[in-house]
Length: 317
Ligand code: SER
Image (cartoon, rainbow, N blue to C red; front, side):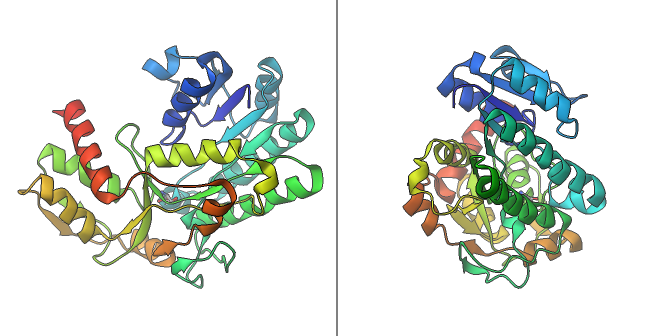
């Protein structure tokens, strides 16, 4: 990877991934692709080039790939799970029509492509405990339907055309920078903001609902190290289970309370979010990622919680 385009660079993952890629490859080598009305701001704007790249417009992708001699594309354009349920046609248009646009440009200009999948690619009939790498994927959400399709189409372009496609199945991502919007796992981010602001947290997910979660530094490391991995070692490509921690609301609440003893939480379960959460794994088995490209997370729940609270306090208080 010498010249990289990040599509969706102002989103939850894109904003931090773009900065991390610029630290590693140099600011001038990483183009921040964005859509209006959300242009890059601050550090993201100042640290390298940015271009309007609407994933649903093939010519915009093509022009930027040619202009900057792009050889790797991180495609992070997507609607998260809850929002996708309210706009399923748009979720498909961005997720799948957009993916075809990226893959067609990649095929003609020899670009590697990373398009993440998710815990959302699994469904109620998937084994929920230590979910295997290769197993039943029958998601009931449009988000999940687009993610399974993304995995299949990405593998298809690799086998049929030799496009170097690789991806991970992200757990719920927790970060203190750009907040997520419209996901089922958002509660595990929102809870830290409530704790730092001294507010009671109203939890939309029921006690005992386990889901895989991951701290942003591990998620960024996963995406970049998979793209840098020796292709000869990869048995799988789209997409690898990766895991670092799995918990329910009561466990993250108890961990935060060690730092904020007065913190209060009550449950007000959102039926849509709960139904989605119940259909997702309790915990994925990430043995293939560990074996094939050396995946190794750094953060567990206690270490993440200490860091989240420290960073949010410094920013919000
Ligand atoms: N964080 C995503 C969501 O909740 C799952 O990958 O939609």
